[in-house]
Amino acid sequence: MPYSIDPGHPDCEGFAVVKDTDGSVMGCHRTRTQAERQVAALYASEPDLDDDDGELEEERAEGHTPTGAMIDEARRGLAWREEFDRGGTAVGVARARDISNGRELSLETVARMRSYFARHEVDKNGTGFSPGEDGYPSAGRIAWALWGGDAGRAWANRIGESQESRIAGGEPAVISDIDGTLVDGDRVNTELVARLNASEAEVYVVTGRPIARLSATVELLDSIGLDYEELYMNRGANDVAHKKATAERLLEEYDVLYAVENDEAARRAYESVGIKTETPRFTVDRSAFDEAVAILARLRTVE
Image (cartoon, rainbow, N blue to C red; front, side, top):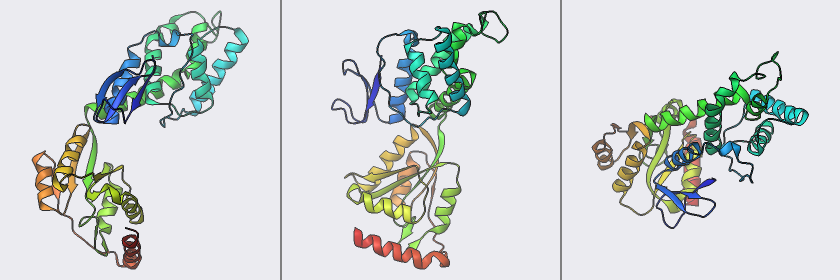
């Protein structure tokens, strides 16, 4: 049963998981990651998904690229199926075509692959699965290849386990403000930018700037060279309330190590939810000072 994620569904605040066949809402979630986890669980609960010979839904690509070994195995499976006229289903053939073409696969598809390999591991015990055996390649061996073979199983398991780890344990993250923290008037906190860029934790920028200044703010962050995961801007709440609420949402998924924030009230709000805070210290890189001043002056005219 195909499912999709709708970030603007009228019956949900946040992200809705919707059954495509009838539009019914399967669940509402505050974050896309939580919605993806439900979609993966829904697909995994359908044990006969790969045996469906009906029409296949078109899936959304979300950035998981097959490896070269997977591509080779899928092409081998397609060639075998054409030669021997056995092995796999319509779903398996469609999967092999996606993989062999190097198409980026969604998290939902990764969940399907994990489910397939877990259910069909037993096929390896059948005669004709291994080279040199009578009947090689068996129908089970061809079907296995269509899904990317051993390389596909390892790839899907690695992505799935990483996702589960992220949900359960929380990947490390840090929070940074902008005004008075990353920039202050004509000054750029080059030391902080460099430290955040070097961190292995994901960087989330949480600012009191209104969403109306989105374009100028994105340009500013690009101009100072900050490598960040996501930008959270204020949509009308009190600045401190906005920052605290954003931090609470991030804590649902991540291990937030600390927040860099110049405002004392905001620091207290972060600390109230268990996040350590730092007060920014400005040290100016003189070689970059003139360029930074010019960039900031230009951006202020844009705003």
